[in-house]
Length: 167
Length: 131
Image (cartoon, rainbow over all chains, first blue to last red; front, side, top):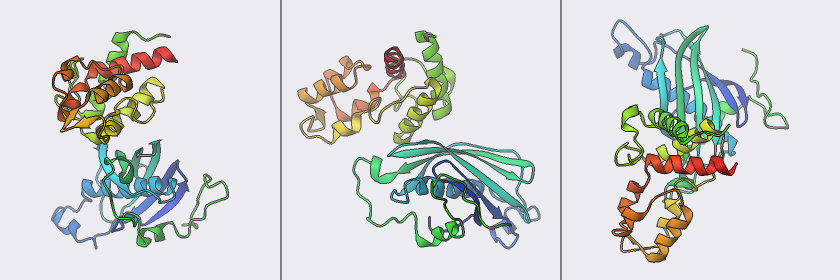
């Protein structure tokens, strides 16, 4: 995860579910071209935002020991546009988690409006690519993205709610 | 309630339609997952997850698609073909699959052809019977 496409987590239940938010702004240059006079957030980037939310959830479940890579978009259905000025909420839930992979389901909302349903699969690449070797360092989870989890404090059970400061 | 083979097949069919984005009528018992239905490696895990959910069963790692651990063992594979020992190991590890067409030319690259829709139905049937 080398670039960050979500703004913060507002809920984090270890190995279960997480909720992140992203503020969409016309300062994002690609919106000027997508489309001229009608700026809407590209759906591919909605998927990226969900992949980051769910990917961090999956990574944290194994204490960031695994290199978690988006492996498959199982489902991506869009119901409405995301426009500049919108704050989108990304909710991700872990459906299955095994040593080699994980599958998540998720939805994006904007206020009361359902924007998208996005289900993903992640691969723990050290575990299932026939022993292919990757660099020792975890190039997926760098310090930059870990800053996203700062300000969230885990409780003792580590499965409890991880609430951030009040909005 | 015991599921009939037909019911199991229909459920497996639904799982594969969702996991691989194929049409119902493509998912015949003889269809191979990789050759006919275009499955890639990550799809196998997806299918395992979906089968677990659909049938309420637990599928241990490599039990349904155990090829990988066998492929890395030189005792089982020689010059890109399965050895006698390797074939015996396959039959032992994957009892729900019919290996007879494979035995004459046990080319590793043809291993994918063995994973048919029918083999999954066989596996689920055995698994449900053992519950």
